[in-house]
Amino acid sequence: MNILIVAGSQRPDSRSAAIAHLIRDRLENTHPNCETDIVSLGDMPAQWRFGEAVDTSGLAERVRAAHGFVILAPEWNGMATPALKNLFLLEGENLFANKPAALIGVSEGAGGVYPMAELRMSAHKNTLICFTPVGYCIRKASAFIADTKAAIADDAMIPETWDRVDYSLAVLVAYTKALAEMRRAQPEIAGFRYNGF
Image (cartoon, rainbow, N blue to C red; front, top):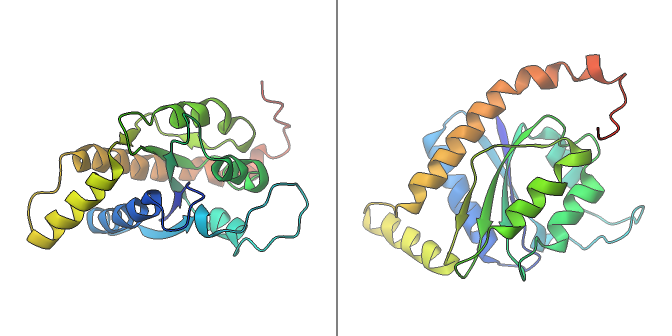
């Protein structure tokens, strides 16, 4: 099972990217049958227009190869980042269809849920990505990263936020297995045109 973790920040060395690596380690430790890949949108060249020839480091192939996704959605002024929206706009056609995604918000403050709501409302329409019903928002992201690294170094109890993240990941793995049959049926339903009804 291949899970692609997407760090949705446009900034290099972002907190979202740091959390993506922590989630990858956690996912591989708790679900040994999962292989993971990380895409940090802050490391990708910007692509703002359809048809531009921009090297995206094989991004489409990496999305196509994934069976499920963890989408880390940082909050920028109450919105999802342009890079994350572009991922669905420019790479979305048939690459995300009938694949589950766990949404995890990232905020340095006490907010962080608006990008998750925004993506649930709009990103699935033409991509047919299946957001799991369980999501979580990691608040005070810098402290969360520091606390997790300290807990790992001291072999101490991982912060309680991880209980909720672990549950979100377990739901994602279950959905990934369940939707495998739907993905196998895609050639049979390909003849029907989806008009966003």
